[in-house]
Length: 60
Image 1 (cartoon, rainbow, N blue to C red):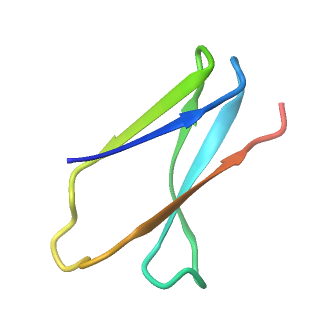
Image 2 (image 1 turned 180 degrees about the vertical axis):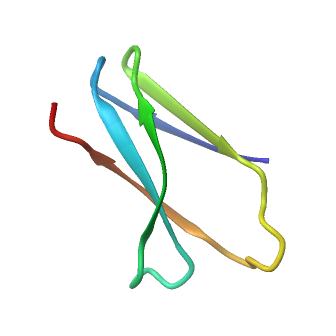
């Protein structure tokens, strides 16, 4: 299980993006922060030896 924790602004939605090469990014999900921390969890995917993650705050 992968767990990603980050500081966040309350009541702001964040897009979680994933990449295998840091060049091409795909949206994994959108999560909403309810307080100043955000936790995203994901099961490892077969055939994906490594994955990179980034968060982007979405405009309200």
